[in-house]
Image (cartoon, rainbow, N blue to C red; front, top):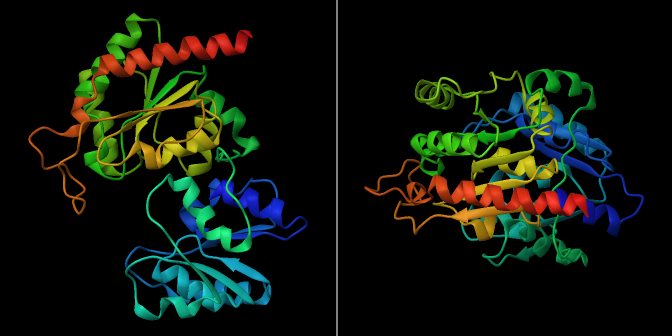
Length: 323
């Protein structure tokens, strides 16, 4: 969403731009320049929380917005768009959802699937005459007050490898991570591992440490702002298709994305500082979070291929800095 927010600011100079996002991801935008306010929406997937959300809706209505745009395009987003009361309410038309959703907006745009996800928002903004940039740039700014804490947690800029994703079928096998660590260490590259905070994600790191007791890893971090501050210190970031991959790109950290069930062409961070490897064709069904194939596609991405790409871009990056 951040490239679209920048485009809105440039198209409407001097506007007071507010953003409403789920409360768990509000820190991603908290320090973004040009925002008048970031509103954190209390939510729980599959459950309405009217006692918490209605006071927020009332406060939003008091702002008397001239325009609103719903980038989510789901039923919740349509309802909130209507309740916030902006005079012009722009929303996308996607297949599915309840039949009356289009009437919650004053203006709609029929969306065409395909293309990179960063550009999808600009399909919608074209209704306001806002065009997409040649290469959308993600933007995230960490809390500068956490810089010292981050330095203690990651004393030296290293290659940060993130084990977990929201869906296990998107995760690179632990045996591959272990082999990458051994090969990278032999090549003089320092790898540090991280993972998510859920018990399942922490179990991945525990399993890896049993295979590689000597491998350094980040501790469980207390919150998202601290993770962003640590992530900013990484020299490179390697992971599957997961939120932290895009956080790293937004923080300006070069990335290597490992893609299998999802498309690198649609989801990999854009720009010359970011690379991606696409696994063989995935045979998993889209409605399962766990790979059911006898030959998981992520396993076809070899540690040798990942290390070779890492070494190649490290040399290229060093050459750019020297020039």
